[in-house]
Image (cartoon, rainbow, N blue to C red; front, side):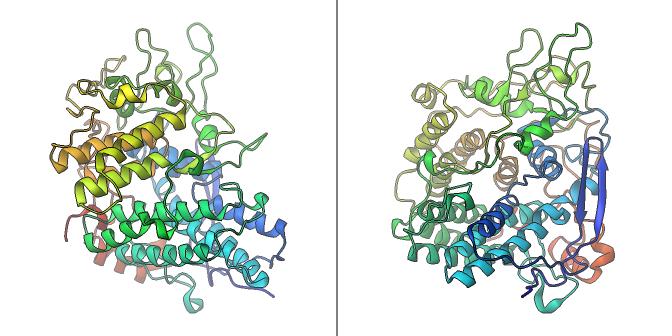
Length: 542
């Protein structure tokens, strides 16, 4: 028996080559894509579940480089581009279509997601076991939430509907409502089977532990609920309060429950590690000494300025020390004319990530900060006080990264982020990034509480750049160093202070799916498919 995965799913492969990056990408609106049926055994399930997991944060290096190293990482204030050969970048707001289309067109995301989702459904149906498919649906929401948060309206609920070759776009509000529907269904199914287990070889996230999947699903539901709190507070409150209700299985509260894809070992390396090492400078030009900071991607000035100012003990866990004399940790400013890597760029702090480190999807600290914000800013019932959730988030993050001094850190009420001094003398930024200190202040305004929470959540979510970018667009926090005048190449489309608000749709959609893409742009973006338009959830309308 054959089953169509996504009826009439696009399969027009495009060659994408730029500098070190190569890969095959596909339009979601072309030809049928049908894999062979998989039999319901452990091998088949394991293969399909790993395939699903690889779509949340792509295990494919080329795909992950674009979605996380070059998109979410820089726009979220974590990473900075350090390859001077790049003349058109996302952080310069003038990226080529090859850079911005990947979330929608990479065959490692949507095509891989739906083909494996269908395979898992076959296994679930044939074994009369709904658990694998419920887990797969959770992973689908985790993966596709990153896609909609990059573009806005996307094809989602109608993918493959009635064998259509072209796919209508759902509004972002419709997409989020569908996310909640799918998460609620999966949570319900798993709560009916809490003691079931998948074979460990089928699950590199939780080793088959269904209760942990329930906690992740509720935590993801909480994340998405807070995302929409400014535009649909009623739905946000309902979803958030359901998510933390213990009778629904609870949320992630301990680092042992962190959602992380621990798939990498031996020659199979973490894709972020591989991508940031592209064009690695093996030896300094002047003295031939070893260079340890990496290649195409270095640590951003933004996060290091905050962490330097707070004297944050997690710095040694996050960053490789700089090679600038007199600067232990110093980042490279984003949105600039990129300096030459071999002579200057390599001197800035690198990203401390190992080849076999897991890819983190969500951590306990983030969940604690979500609960803190929900309680402090939106007055949702989170089952506790905002200040306690905030302090718990800091403690959990220090524990996750193996850093000491959490209690001293969270009680500091004097230290503030430092201003950015560029050791190269070309891209310094002398304005205060924030006057916010670390210690919780219960008497502060909701705005100040939100800024304090988001800053610490941002620091704790290190490497989750797309999540950081979403928070920045939603709240305006943390304050990030803007692009320089020369570095903002958008021609006035993107405000340097606010940064990119989204990325444009793939150019191929205008040829392959013109009616639907033009409707989406006209209806949901006011006729402008560019990086300066706010997404639905970034507006305060309700």
